[in-house]
Image (cartoon, rainbow, N blue to C red; front, side):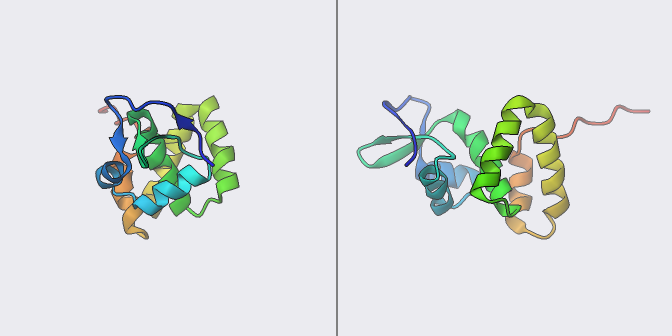
Length: 122
């Protein structure tokens, strides 16, 4: 089962609102919670997602849509903790390549962390 925080912060949002804000299906978010890939608070049967977890949620969905298994996602997240900027840039580039093939990836692209830096004018 997933880890739970003991209280809900004033900044946390209910799971349905997190789904609406990100465009990620609530069922996918629940799956990430059950797999222990994402953390949430649970108050009176309602899961709450912290703002910090929203970025991770976007990353998780992109990795899943790129056909990564839960085990591979865990390994990739470990590498993200070591070199977050490099990881995020690589993920952004990979999603950009596949966005034309998958509508949901195209929707996630502007939400991903680590967008490439703009080129300097020549």
